[in-house]
Amino acid sequence: MLWILGGCIVARRTLDMPPNDETTVAVLTGTLGHPIEGIARHPWIAVRRKGATDWRVYEVGGGGTESDPFHDHSQYGDPILQGMWRGEEADRMADCVEKIAHDEKRDVEDHYIFYPGPNSNTFGDRVMRACGLHASLPSTSVGKDWRGWIGGGVTSEGTGLQLEKPDEGLPKIAAATGGGYFELTSAANLVFTFERVADELHHQYVLGFTPAVLDGKSHALTVRVSKPQFTVRARKSYLATRVRRS
Image 1: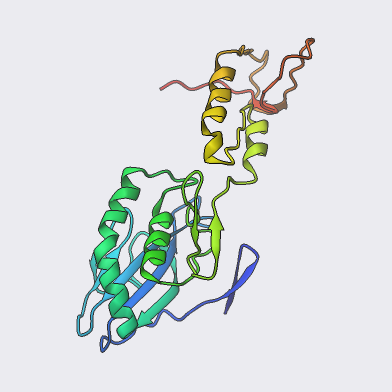
Image 2 (image 1 turned 45 degrees about the horizontal axis):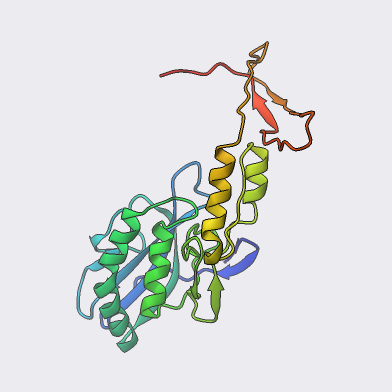
């Protein structure tokens, strides 16, 4: 069976659980709940030592001992096996995972941001890179490429280098919703960029209006100014509905 993810064809591995005659390390992902089940996945790393019956699972927001993390990892659906290692190689990986996973999990949970990161996929990617678990997380694993607001490193597959950059769609989102977009391209520009943001916040006017009819429909919105030195940042549409106050 072939599955298409982000334009790439990925062959699904079988979810048959291997015997316990060797140490096994596995990386799996599952879908999140509705309504984002089709656009986001969550990873967990499962470790079972040679001769053991249970697995030790490492993940953000959970983890612990499980008997079958391949088929019965409760809240996440449609599990995919992204990679599995056995034998002496897995022994070395298991040592590494057991050593660093707790601190990585705590760091991500303390600084968690769903998008762009750090999040559960950031945790999975960090542990995979540090412990040599060379596998690809799906393109829908939002946060897997998070290296900091400006950062870089070796790819999860261990095949090259990666530089973190902002999502290319952010300028469009900012423009459509009336926001500003300032891209930080170098640590040397940090002070200058934040000075621009602070200066703009101190030199702006905020305008608002109330629609004559609250018809519950979306309407186009255009704001024009007579003085060319002013820059308009306004959303492109609005929903004419009454605000419900709790």
